[in-house]
Image (cartoon, rainbow, N blue to C red; front, top):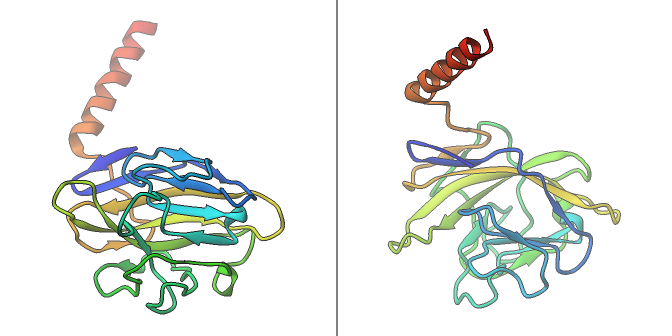
Length: 188
């Protein structure tokens, strides 16, 4: 996990999406995942059957969904949109407002190829801040596990472009340079 300014990112997590009904539930704020049929307390998204289907009730005790994917329409069973790199996800993105999922994600995704799902996320910050972000996935439809590769969101509620990740800050680069210099001196 890395954070910079307002963007929180989880890069190269590579969480398998099992081919069963339990699938994988994921808490986008912590990176914790579960393959339990009961879901995950605090969970946001749930991909099942290798990614062939999804739901937004990963936390089965929640009274409202915290995660809403960008869909082809605002209905609660609309298929996922596969967004291109650089597409902005924000308040004008099409999402549902209730629980629901889809059982056919392949209207817009090609099985076995990476794609991007945009989303809105109600943060567990006590203020119900709505964050916008993206998740990079490989969805499957042939009894092959899918994969949740990476995701990021802007925790201030600002729109975020698909595949945007924070760049290292100048202070991080200076620290890395000093560490490399110290390591080089130690070896000599």
